[in-house]
Image 1: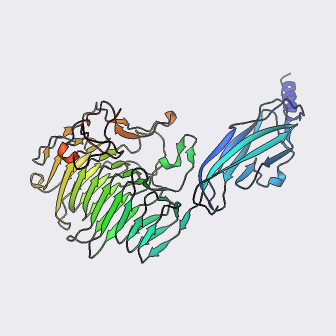
Image 2: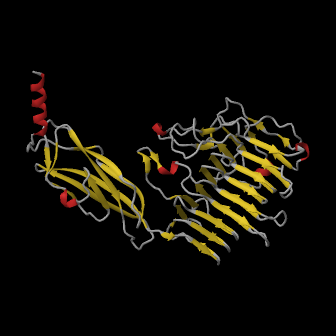
Image 3: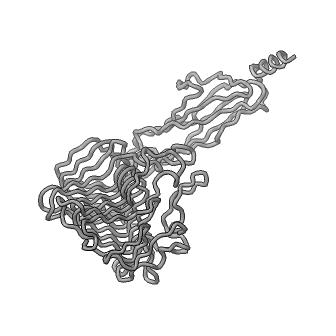
Length: 469
């Protein structure tokens, strides 16, 4: 009796029905692709074509409405000429793999493209709607530039390998650089990268797709190498970064001079250095001014200072990289047990140091997020005032009017990545943040608006963001 039931069920699953009331279903009805860089295909997305019926159904044909922009593989068959008379047994399914590929369009503005993949059977059509945004790019391969260069904002750049700039590098406001996993920038001359609040410069990985349905690839660190400013000889170079987002690489801004005098000058203002697999900002023998900048979620040091004079005002340095602040294994490395900000004055081979930190937030997963390493800390030249610090109370003369973190503090809107809730890190201030109203007004008068353009006239909050309802 049991065998007869099995045979009856099996035979029914194999028996093809031509009943038009029986329908196939798709795991999704539409499949949008993120920005597609023309001339370079996307990663492959998978959907499932189900036959929920007891009987088998035969697909007469599978056709794209247009066919210029998308490629498909149906149940292991990539040759569209073979997509006919394909049978799906009852209660069975077939995998359909889709990728987008767009030839260069010859235009600067993004191009919206659409198509449909139609499955035709028994007089029915089951349709998958497809869409993507195509974007032409300037492609930069391995290059060594011996003259001044300017990267414009007319259309994005796709950087495939090492770029060496031996003279001045200028990056226009609004420029976007998509960086391949081998991409790295070496600036041996000066740099002027001056975006604006409304038109920032963006350096990011080239993957615009998703790791998983709810996880953009951009959330994974270590997608490209970094920006290295390597100074040798004279005259001293100047490196300026205003409203530049440096995202999801290994190293954000690495600035080093072999000199101990005539140091280069680094200016970082209104920037966001986020999700680095190693360092955020490194300054070695550099005079640095860093203001209104978010440096967040670096696996090692957020800011490392050694040699030179450094002024940090109204920055948010937040170190919540990896587990347990996200329980997704999306990073290529784990968080190092090091300070978010490390001031290192222990080397005699480096330039004389002094550090001035005003109205910053320095916090994270570690108990000691700020470390001042000096042979005689009491004599270190500097001032630390109006900061919110996750560190032991500094009993040094340079520290005054700072607020020190407790474990019960709620500082930010969100210091976790809650992927099931589609909530990503947000380092704006929470309404009960202890960083509200603790900043020094004399410093704020020189930096009167925050990174979002909000005025600091009525109250001075620590960090790069003012709290606002």
